[in-house]
Image (tube, rainbow, N blue to C red):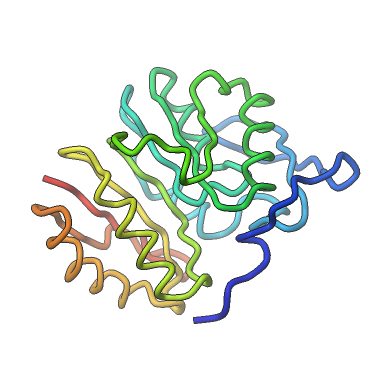
Length: 208
């Protein structure tokens, strides 16, 4: 795996002069979001996230959902737009990304149901009915495994997580590792590949 990249850890929020406005489509709606350099995919929705959004079923009408590694917020915003009664928690370690995701929740008019938080600010007893994630593969295997073993066990009973991973960055080996590791942390659990598209795999982790 490649070493960590700056866009995962940028601490300083973007200044007004660094912001850029990008038109995107979320949940079938044409909207404008703000992005900036120093985050993942500042030019819009990346290919992996597009594959995930195209392949997963819509979120439930209500529940508590997690966007793990939210970046500027495309998954969290989509969840909130598609599930007006849902509660969405968007988590990232990049302070600049968190600031942008908060701005975008306001501009897309979902700030009342999207909480954008650093990992340590998420209540320890909070569980999630649904997780969507384009996980940061390039942080390295050890950090990625720690991330997934920290958050996937927080699935609620009958909860489901969907992860999108590039095939040539280890999607199949990650699926095997999850299938071997998660039963010891959250049994019963099933790990399956549900889609393969444009060089990406969509993995589903189901609890219960």
